[in-house]
Image: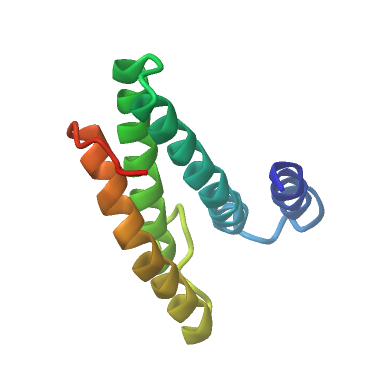
Amino acid sequence: MNDTVGVISSKYGAELPELPAVVGMTVNLAGRQRMLTQKAAKEACLAAAGVDPQKNVANLTESLSLFDATLDALINGYAGTIMPPPNDEIRAKLLQVKDLWTPVDKILIGITKGVVPSK
């Protein structure tokens, strides 16, 4: 998936020079969301298992912050950097992602604060 996002981003820039860079940036950031959820899950599991917990909690905190900030930017747009959703249907799907993510986010935030997750 990362390769696909890279190709799409570079193709936009190389073959469609009239297309604003904001489109490529938006595609790139949207593509990273999946990777960030996997990274956060890995960091949470490693921290909970006692594998370098301080480092993994710090990394988890950063991953969660980046995911949340990026998702908010994808939902609302960010002037000059991330385009807002092009239609209501895509915005609704992004809001659905946020709704699905919120309970998971709370569990992961708890881990960053020392809560031991249940099995």
